[in-house]
Image (cartoon, rainbow, N blue to C red; front, side):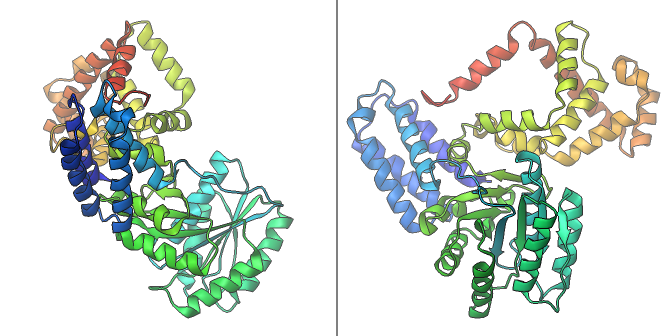
Length: 451
């Protein structure tokens, strides 16, 4: 997400870090580059204009001009304005109503609404410890009802059955009644989508909204449609009292125009973003973290949260203790680290949250492929326990056997062993204050006051 914007905008503000003194001229040049970067990212023109005006006004203020590090101070101004445009801070779901709290999801066909229902149910169950029921009132597509039943089972949510011959309002009322009987905390209603906004669709969803009085009415929209996503959200908001927006497919959106335009145009907060196909790939939208990632400063808080929620802490403690005692790092440990990384969304997701990623050599991120992690796991699984514990014994004939067992080539085995050796060296550096040194280096990437 934001790859092209991050590259353009990140480079522009990084150039300012070495500037000893800000003038109207170099601010003017910088803002021209920023404007072009935002327009290329498909950010709506009114948003770009207001953003540039605010940055210019603050950049020429005494606080920035008299700063000891004016370049870095301006970077912080840009960061603060990006955050402000996207909504300042995450706005949580308002579920403080008599159970079941009804969440109504609306959106156009193809936006990923049904999958988002399941992702949201999973998030509520795991993060909020809520019992969740889901129901589809899409009586126009029997496949949509079946799809919801399948994904509900995948995430462990209760499913309320419905049929195409029923009325959507009757289905919703019956689902609420059943959710009360089963003591569900939340009921999520998946509504019918259309290829475009029409009167019939709006009439039906208004009728549905009036009958169920939802605690949250969320519009699900495909972020890859750019500023059109923001305009579609506004059209829905004009017809329906939306409480928020969920942006889907942000992992495929290299521009980021939707995220930067939606809050400004609709006045409604982005509450969640879909960051992949997995059921775990739904994240609360934190404007300040997204702004930080756009400027190449990473999302250290998000990274820590990923670690806390996904890591097996007992295994991690044993691993840390093993390293501390100097017992070494073997291929069994390497395999365990790969599994933990996969649980946190894969290496590409993790690297996107690390500070300084835009500073990596061009094309380096292209080498990051989560499918290769599966190859590594297959190779390690083809080894004997002795080979995993003592990798030095893996020579010619063993390499051929391991390659054949994993369905890969000998050169793939060699590549894994080389990567393992590099990781072994890195683990040795972690001892004796190595981790603290790494954190200090990360801190230097950020402007003053950002960490």
